[in-house]
Structures are given as C-alpha cells and as structure tokens.
Image (cartoon, rainbow, N blue to C red):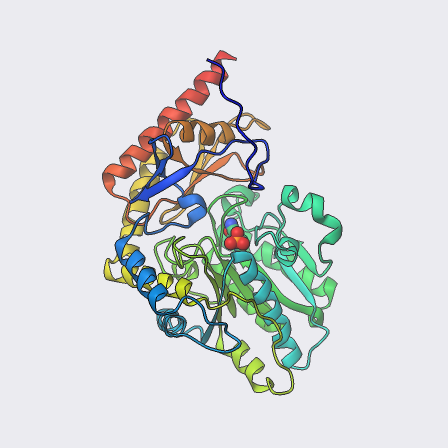
Length: 440
Ligand code: PMP
C-alpha cells in the first residue's frame, strides 16, 4: 500500500523534513502516541518531566491557581505562588542565595543572569567589566547572548556574525577524556585554573564580569560532572579577580543529580548566581529562575534608586507556572524523591555499565547519565541507537556530534521494573544497530 502523502504541518518544526509522531497523553513514565503505542520517557525530553506525566497533585495545583488567578503582570503585582516558591527555594539552598527571579525559558534565565552580573559591576562603579568567560562545548541556550556564551559549533555557525565578542572560551572540564600524562584530578584542575588565569590576564582582570559554567555539562558532551576542587578553585579565582561565578543548572539542577542543586553533590561550593529550569516545574508549565546571592543582590539594591535594573519579561513570575513548580517541589520533598534519584541512578548506571556493548563510558550523577560508545574514530552510532530506541518504545536524548553518546534522564518516580524495561529496550536497540552495521 502506498502511504498517503502527509499534508505540510502548520508548525515550523525543529526539523522541516522530519514527520513527528503526535504525543496525545502521558501517565507516569510513559507518553502515548496517537496510534496508541507507548513510549518510555527515558530522558524526560531533555531532563524536564522529573515527576513523570499526569501527576495529580500538580494538575490540581494548576487548576486551583487558574481558578484564582492565572496572570498578573509583575510591573503591577506580586503573587502568593511566586513569593512562596521563592522562599522555599531560598530556604532549601543552604543559606547561599537571598533572592530569586522567575522567567520562562532557560535561555531567558541565562540572558538575565548575564545582565545581573553586568548590573552588579555597574552598581560597584566598575563599568569596564564587560567580558565573560565560558567554556568550549558548553550549551547555555539559543538566544543570542546565551548562544554567544555557549560553544556548540553547529548551533552557532549560521548566527556567528550576530554573536557577541564579549564572550571568551576556555577548555571544558572533562577529566575522564582530557586528563593527560597520568594527571590526577588535582593536577588536571590546576592546569585548567592556569588556563583561566591566563585568560583573565589576557583580557585584563578588571574587564571580566563573570565566568559561566554548567556545573554538570549536559546537552553537548553528555552528563560530564564537574570536580569539587575545580568548583572551589574557580570561585576563589573569580573572587580574587573581582568577577562573579555563574552556574548554569538549567539541565543538571533541581534534583536531577540527587541533590537539589548539582553543586551540593560536588563539594558544596555555591556560585554568585545560578540558573534553574527544567525540573523546576517539571514540564507542567514553562518556568525558569535565577538564584541570586546576597553579595550581588545587596550591591544592586543599594544603588537601585539611581541605577535601576532595567530588564523584564512579560511572563516573568507567572503565577500559574509558579503554582505548578511549588507543587512539584513540595512533592519532591514529601515523597523523598532525591533519595530515590540517588538509588535509581545507581541502579541504572550499574545495569548500563554491566551490559552495554561497545561501551566507552557510562558517566554522570543521579538520574543524569550518559552512555558513550566506543566505536572507530569518526564513527557514530548514537544517532542510530536513539532512532532505534524510539522505534522500539524508548525516548533517549541524543548528545551533540562532539561525542558518540546518548543521555538518560528518566523521571524521578521511575520504578525498578521500569529501569529494567528501559535497559532492556536500550540493549535490544544497540544490538539491532550493531547487527545493521555488521550487515553493511
Ligand atoms: N542552559 C542549559 C545548561 C541547557 O541545557 C539549556 C537547554 N537544554 C538551556 C540553557 C536553554 O534552555 P531553554 O531551552 O529552556 O531555553
């Protein structure tokens, strides 16, 4: 039978050549497609749906808030859910932050964090601090400032002439791949700190506004954890040069690695500013945030009357989105889901380590894990594995072409039986891809 030609979609999809299956319903760790088949959500899209789908407490909180008030512009009003959510996040962050700003996307949060860093230096009477240092292979979002901070060549290429020259890049922190000559973690960290120091000196330390890093690298290289000494040394270096340290925890934060913030599992060095996003409202509403330390907040606030922070977004602090996030965060605490993330993460990583063929590395923390394959140099099987998994009923996130890897970030509520199912579909799919390669 000849397939009916598909009418062109009215949506400008991510790919204009691909036909997307329609997701119709979601329950627990599964998404059901319009043909009735179920997909196990093995990466929560891109580490988003941490409570899974159809969570009653969150649905009820959204419904109740919609009944009361869906929107009130933040130029005029604050709202109870936004205030309560901010207090909860501040209280659960070891006293490291004093205020919180809520936005919608991760890219928006990164943009605003960069602007807050700039505003801090203006408030301190240091207008020459306009440079930012970020890392090669980082991903910080797709808006122009965030894209300038990030360094994924394929995402940047078309827009290169529009990107900001204020961003400068150093090596990523990828110990398992980049350590040379038997370096241990401390020696490796010292080498990367010398690279930062050289970059500060080349730019002029008095011109650097901030360093921005992903605490655990996500979309580009796949679940690459930072090192405790790296984070503490970097904060010390930034402090010494009067620059701020920004952690982008849009993907790795909000419980994904088994602690509320990823840095809490990496030695406990907090940043000056931190972006949060995906697990915050778990996909039930679009919400992101910036956690702001008192040093930054106090400096900006002190001089606010003469130097106001002029930057805002229409949907910032959206009451419905904050109500959803509040319900998500309360559920995570009530059901002790962070312990579950650590337990299930250990189980999943062990099963993947024990049984994946062509395995180069299983890396990551908690339920934020990447499997990198060990194929011939230049060969790439991850994209075929991700496509075959999808055909077989499992969605996994494909990392960038810089690594031959897929990312697992299932819902925190995943059960042991569902972990087994995930691993089983994954291994069947890897075998299918290997068989295809042998047949070629
Ligand atoms: N920062 C990081 C670390 C991310 O992983 C992402 C999204 N994957 C972003 C920023 C951008 O977030 P959004 O897609 O919500 O704009």
